[in-house]
Image 1 (tube, rainbow, N blue to C red):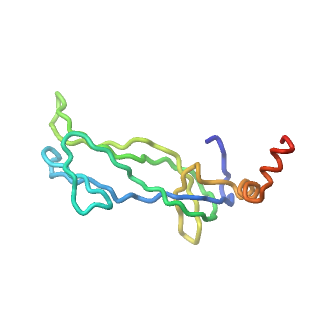
Image 2 (cartoon, rainbow, N blue to C red):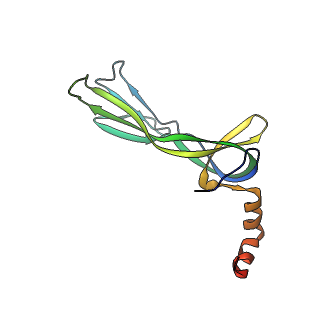
Image 3 (cartoon, rainbow, N blue to C red):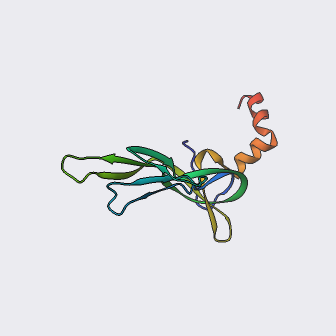
Length: 141
């Protein structure tokens, strides 16, 4: 998004992310066995050659806080069975789909990672919520 926030700026947020709880389990050498455990599932799914899952879930909730910085996080975890020509066959893991997230403190010593499309400065939020944005568009500016 090209918007910039300043350290200590008051912001309004409409969502945050938290860990999904999805994970994989393998045998010790990662060469013969891999299972995918979904956060909602009571049984594992056997991974044969390739699988991918989300590392985070988006929680839609409105809150206010203070912007303290931006961080980048990988949002997907992929496992793939590979038989490289010069290495040991087995399951290999990689993270991808990196995205920026705002770090927002919303209470004493409590912070959340906020998707960049779910954060606005307090001034932007007041304009949007107060209807001033619509009035500015009518006036041409």
